[in-house]
Image 1 (cartoon, rainbow, N blue to C red):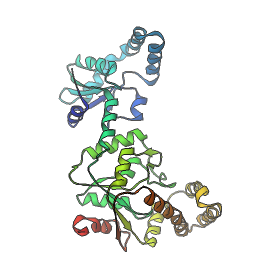
Image 2: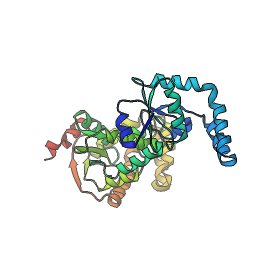
Image 3: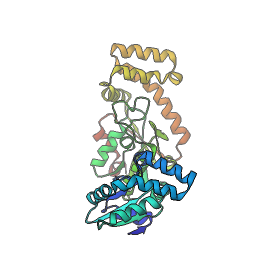
Image 4: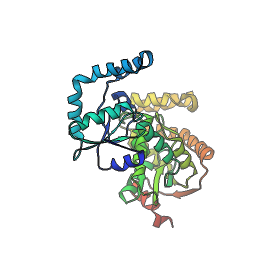
Length: 339
């Protein structure tokens, strides 16, 4: 068994599986992307051991831990054997202490070569937050609601550009309607871990496209360092005709259950206005989605303008287009087209 710092651990993680031996609850809250959870304790067991440690001391806590783990030691080691590649496995817990070292010892009894992360998952979190201070050559794609920014980014990716799809990672399109029809959102911690993993795989010497966002996308928080870097980076604002934006909103949300759309509209009442919410709900009931979308653009355009004027400090280039087609608009943004 050996131990390495976070830099070496992540390098090794490109080819060696990672075993996260924290409890299932800790793992769900946030983990290194791609890691396997082989928990030493269940959530309840971890709580009991922790309470004993605080109230009665280390010896009693260890005895209780052995009581829990003893009957399943073979099963834990066998699971590690299944996960390992070429007999090698990376192991970490929260701080790189007793849990990871004991589990690495156990796995080693079956002949596995284990490497433990110094400082544990806590070291990983500290490392990634520092990386967000200088995340390569960012180029921000901006534009009001309905501009099709995410689709344009995905088209740019197909054309060979480096892209971070924040809304895809967050499982949310932004706005009060952004969660409709989307999978459950990750925790903010996991969202940030996933962003780092994608950024870390890109070439920092090449342009990295990223969509302009608020600090939160649904319930998922961007890393503050990254958000500040995005606001300071140069941006391209895609100016798409309003009629095309309305069409896109109808296309994206037209198949969503009307009751869910109504509930999202009601959420806007404080800032959108009671009379306009009432009118939008009436139009929704009649199936006039285009007019509803057009009304909502008034609200979201004001929000976009306010956010842009308040937070953006980097340069802004406006690119006008007469189409809502994502592929065509992506081609307009390619470096050779911009120069």
